[in-house]
Image 1 (cartoon, helix red, strand yellow):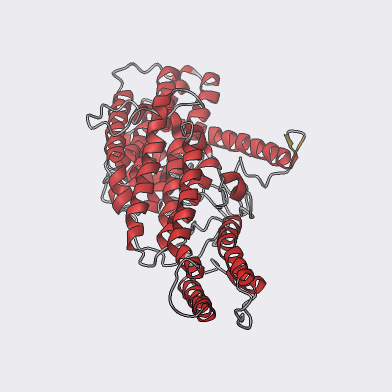
Image 2: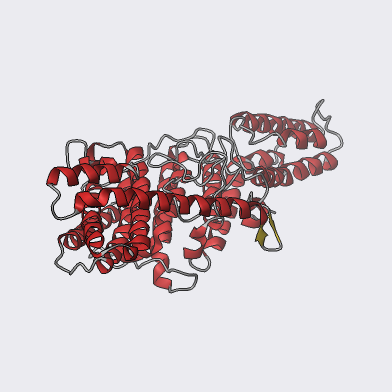
Length: 499
């Protein structure tokens, strides 16, 4: 009788260590922010290849469960929100005052040199002065992946702040100042497009897809606002350049989207953990899929409406639960691809039963990371139950491979001409030998989640110990070896799967 495995059994069985299931605000594919010890066994140390955690060390994500919430009110964050709002307003005011000092350089009589210097100073005030060099030899193609993510975040924050500075102040200026402000806005927007163009020109990679989605939203939202604010027509150079850049970002993202299955199969080093624990790629890719969803609208438009003749994507992710079955295709298809690769790679594990332990650990890690994040909103009905049943199947396969042969040593069906006492003694000796061999072979196997580990241990004990106890009761003539009581045997089995 095998124990039923459900996600409720093992989902909350251990400290989560600061699980971050936010869906916006950062590019880190890491689903956990704690450290090296995680209850599902997947690693977050190497999951963050592209972009660092969006929340600095010691801070909490907006959706962190570490927040103290009482009666539906987050009391610990009220003060920080107030202080943050005041800081933002102070920054806006500071940028507005700085803007006023730079406007004369953008008046009609000013020369190109004065404008270039003022633009450089203006952008440097937002810590994005480097965008002016993005079309040179120091462009996006030469940047490390982590640097691309850092610059995209800084760029998006700067563009949002600029738009707000222009919007809050331009109505208070004179006509000539508004004209100069329009010139500053056009120069700033044109310079900011260089980063977006550099992202679109990057080589196809998982990081490029995230960066393209991150850049698409600010460009598609901020530039039309600037156009209306300063009455730029459709043929205005900045708006025309923005349209070309958006088209390039869409093409780049779709090309990367078509390559995602190839990335899953080849991008991460497929060195198999010899203890059967969770492969590092699980934490990486499940976090990556979650990061894809933080820009759901752009993901819906860019990938969901792709004219993909190969049918790689069945539809766009829904913006809310139950928004249409076609939206489930993207997330579920990519997770299924990851599961298929894990299944294929598990064949490299030589020991009988280790493959099932490996797949049990990894299926549980995938399931846990899915249901504890926004990914669960994009999963079709029955997806969770199918994985739970798959886990039960892995346990049954493990028991059949690793422990059924051990228990079979006690089978009385094997007759023979030898005296009964000799047959039973030999059978018991064979059982002890098979038991020791099984325990020795599995001494380094690991099930990181404590509750899942407990389920597997109980399943082993429930199969081996009662059979052993019945055999001893049915054969009182057999002398039991020292240290071989049923209780001692159960204690021995309780040490399994610690690695």
